[in-house]
View 1: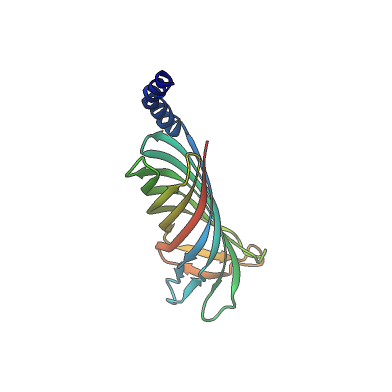
View 2: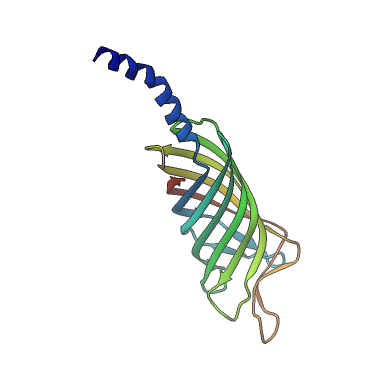
Length: 205
């Protein structure tokens, strides 16, 4: 019995090393997220009138590929249903889809992992009115958050980011696709900024 106990104690360091190695062997992370998005404005360069996007909820999916113990490559998709309005035009339902790629850097490789993130890609603005054209712009995001892993495979992600769509000079927004050129806004060059706060489940495999 005594020998068995000594043998078990001798195996503890080996088992601990094996468990730690198993914890770091997860290469992929998949995180369905949901949350709230604020902001977003297009300003007319001629009249100064603003097309304002309403604050609303959004859903998304983040897929991370581990590069090393503290950094990952990230692909993420976000879908936001919102409304846009000006002082002179009625409210217009709009779907905003963002598809971006980039990376994250975690400041710890423990169960609680604060991280910074940066991505680039494109944002697509799709009005519900089928007579209006969709608009697609280059976009990027900066932010960070924290991951809490309750066990080796599953955890929770809190994610906060500033994201911006880059508006080119002389850009017309939400134009009628037929029957003449009519647009809600002739936007000036600049950034259409939004802020989002997401929470989600994180599964590693």
